[in-house]
Every structure is written in C-alpha cells, then in structure tokens.
Length: 272
Image (cartoon, rainbow, N blue to C red; front, side, top):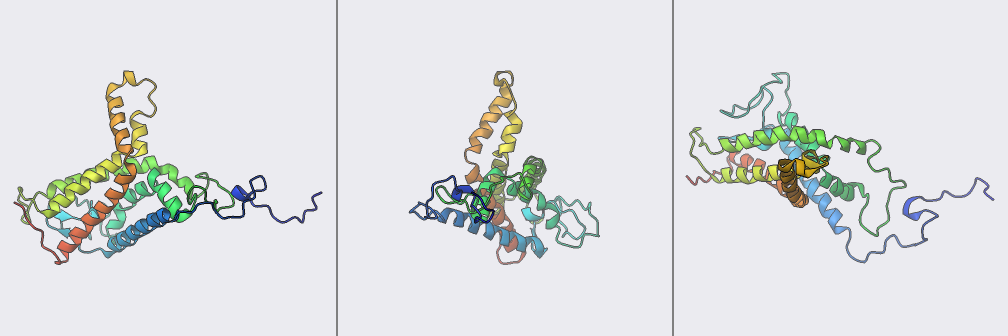
C-alpha cells in the first residue's frame, strides 16, 4: 500500500514500466563523436560570426562587401558605391550595422529542420543518440518555450529570401574592379559566386519551401509546374544537411576573405 513516502520514480527510459537496465547505454562505439562534432562546428561559427558582427570594421573592400553586413541599414556604414546602402535606421543606430541584418538569416538557420536536429543533439542532448538514455526527465518536444519558437521557421524563410536576393546583387557587383568598372573577375568573385550558389541551394532545399510549393496540393496532375518545382526542391532537400554545412562554411569564408582584403593582409588576385 502506498504511504506517500516512496522515493520518486524516474520517468522516460528509466521509468518503472520500462526494463530495468542498469547500463547508461548499450552502445559500444563512440556515439558521442557526431554530437560533439556538431557542437564544435556550430560553436566555432557562433564565435566567429559574433566577433565579426560586433567588430564593425573591415567589411568592405571595393568591389566586395561582406555578406554579414549587407544590406547596410544605418548611416554609420562605410561608403559602398553601388552597394545596397539603405540608411533607413538613420544616425540613431550606433552599434554595428551587421546586427540589424544578421537576425534574419540567423533566425532562419536556428529554426531550420536540420539545424534543430543538429543542435538538439549537440547542445540540448535530446536525443543524444540511438540506444542512449534520454537525459531529460520529460520530453515535451517543441510545445513549450523556448523550443516552441521553432514554429517561426516559415516566417524566417520569407525573410531569408530577400537577403539571398541582395547577396545575389552583391555577387553581380563583384564583377567590377576597384574603380567600379565592369568586366573584372578576381578570386573574390569566385568566392562570392560559390557562396551565393550554396546560399540559394540551402534556402530552396528548406522543408518549408518544399511544403509551400507543393505540400498542400491534392492533385499534382492539375498543377504540373508546381509539381516539377516540388520535385526539384525535393531533390535538393535530400542534400539539406550537406547544403546547410556547405553554405555555413561558405558565408563565413566570404566574410573572412573580405576581412583579409579590407585589413590589407591580402591582395585580391585578378583573373581579368
């Protein structure tokens, strides 16, 4: 008979209704390497992007502008001839202009379905890996704060689209020389071209994009164009993890390349 003084019964995989297995897990391989690598990669990007976002310097070397700082939305931006300088925030904004724009691609990535899995396993440890005990007392998924904010992913997708368009414009401007004459192509142009291709591939491979294009169609035969687009996005979606990491690395490399040029540490090799 219950007396009310019994010790607390664990829930989850160690609940009273589950098999009483003393071992913390039954895996013999180094299952923790994948979550650790995920955590290390994301942490490295967070540290680098935070440093660059607050630096507020060395983000423009004609004709290249760092993707972290484009478009420039405050008066404290350095002059960028022909670049997307929209001083809609005026002079009252005194912090780095990158902080005004990075929130949108950052929000898009943080709520991305792949990154959810990646940082849930790498940081949240939920779940850490197959056949490894769930460390949390109760699994609530994305029904409570702060994880319920992941449901904003579709809206961040809408915000990420114009950012990708602007970065495409910046890539077109990379075909100018330092005197803003067209017909230039340097190593930086190639860096920007690779980056924008990966940015678009990652953005369009998004699960929300796939659903928006064809997720709610009842009859594909009545919508042949949308069906073909849905199939194309579906093939990209199969490589969503690869595109997520590739675009993350490429956007950091594009920013770092501009930093090297702007700080005078490197001279952009010109092909023609």
